Length: 201
Image (cartoon, rainbow, N blue to C red; front, top):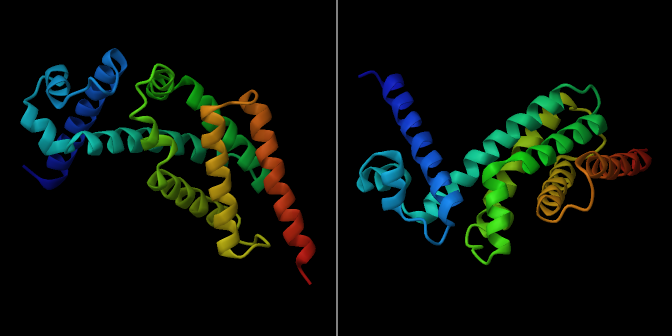
């Protein structure tokens, strides 16, 4: 068995297990989710689940990171379709918020929080790893597409981290439709850029 084929098989198995975990979570809630139930749903042994995903905490982290990967691909597509930074931010934020509203796992997490089964919520909305990954992803997009911004790298990173945190806040407690929220966040970025431009000699 060649290494690429072995890797592809393991990726397929991992996705199958994560799909099974998401289904058990949707049906029974996070507190009642066990590795045995995930194994039964996926049609594998419990040991296979532990070998591939680790324990329940590692399972939660992998579920969240897989969803994040999907969101970031939407962000990339929206961002790269624009020719200027502010419209790119607006489009990317709107895409992320629209995706959040349609994401079955995220919807289940939020609904379970309202019913008291909130153990999975911190893995999403209080996860520093998630913020770091999303911010780094955006930072790479921005610096590759718009290398001549009037901001030093640390300020660019701070602005983008703030956008990530605000998007997460609006996912949990939306204050308006995605397009309006996206326009507001893009306006904040525009104001920061205008302020930075005014500081230039």
